[in-house]
Length: 140
Image (cartoon, rainbow, N blue to C red; front, top):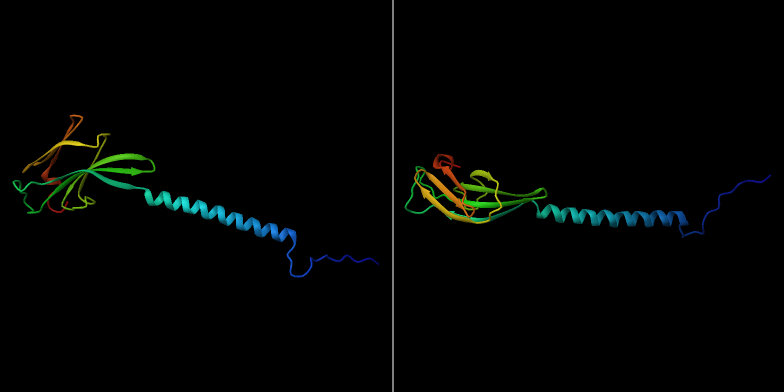
């Protein structure tokens, strides 16, 4: 009677199929590590906020909340593209305040005129934007 016996590799040495599986797992780990590194690098860069213009409220203009206000033109870059915001408020970092999304490719502001009624921004393109003071005083 002939019996079938499984042939085992010499002791201490894995079979060829196990070595290939191990190598495949190492390659998969390296590929996943590279992809994760790229994803983290991209995520660290977006969204990106950059203040491209800043104007401080002059001392000659005062508002009812007795705070100093700032205006900034902020460029916001995301994976989907680039947008611009006008931010007016009391926060020096311009991360909080009254936000106005604008459609422009202009990175510069020609003039900013602060009055007790509000602030007027004139862009290099000739467009003007007026933001009434009631929208950015008293906590905004």
